[in-house]
Length: 298
Ligand SMILES: NC(=O)c1ccc[n+]([C@@H]2O[C@H](COP(=O)([O-])OP(=O)(O)OC[C@H]3O[C@@H](n4cnc5c(N)ncnc54)[C@H](OP(=O)(O)O)[C@@H]3O)[C@@H](O)[C@H]2O)c1
Image (cartoon, rainbow, N blue to C red; front, side, top):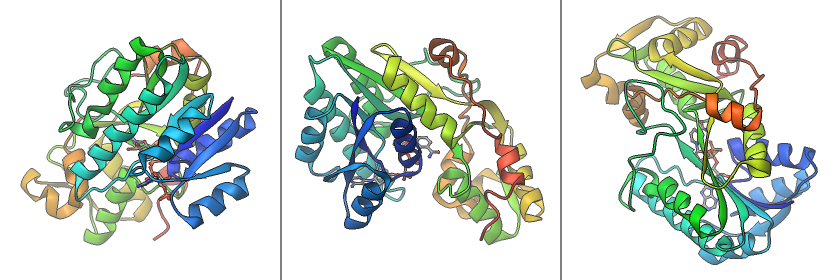
């Protein structure tokens, strides 16, 4: 398939591009800068210059492809509304372009906010509905297109898609530990996150693209629930730092923006995803990655 990938230069996107190329697909990648264009070109990807704010570039990419994988995100953590609006606009534009074609559209989502107090299931609907909600309500919006002739697939990534070079939530926990000389967890540390190794997540994106039915919700989750206290202990051991509780009222000062996620349950099951696609994550666990030094470079 000729696959249009947004976010092709990102953490998950670049691994997904490798995975798609290895499987014999052709990739057209969205690039918003000359540097991104050059790196895609070097990877053997056809470059489409554009931006999440240039909806015509997204229309053009989607119209000319057999399938779309949308992984770009502004990740403006200081102004989440900016990222959310761009996310909703991009998803709506791509889905409208694909409507009536039955072509696959894999879009990125997260586990946060789906449920609290137990692992999220693929059958749990996100409570985020409408433009002012988390991620602009983009998952629910996208899933509506399953009835409009789009083979839409939402891939909810674990809050840590880990590995050497990660610049996601895990790297912010590590940075906070370095800054304060203590590896912290919020309160009693019993909130839990799920985790997945990056190439396993990329493989799931490809499998979903190739064969998940319209309206599927996939969980890119290898480890269902690691408590924030366990994660703090992995970091403390790797960096040789003490591990301690951070009071909820001090969490923002300790962790920065990631405090609001460090006090959330983002655990999730992937039983249905594994059964549906025969996906079997095989990469290192988060503990193994951290112990091997994936987060040890300053
Ligand atoms: N990583 C995780 O642990 C995780 C967990 C849950 C959900 N997710 C979601 O999965 C998706 C991929 O995440 P990621 O970690 O791979 O993200 P990332 O590493 O931050 O990559 C973001 C990508 O979006 C592109 N981008 C940013 N702003 C853009 C704009 N204005 N126009 C066009 N492209 C733009 C970047 O391009 P440049 O290279 O040019 O900057 C990059 O390719 C996101 O939706 C993310 O929220 C990720």
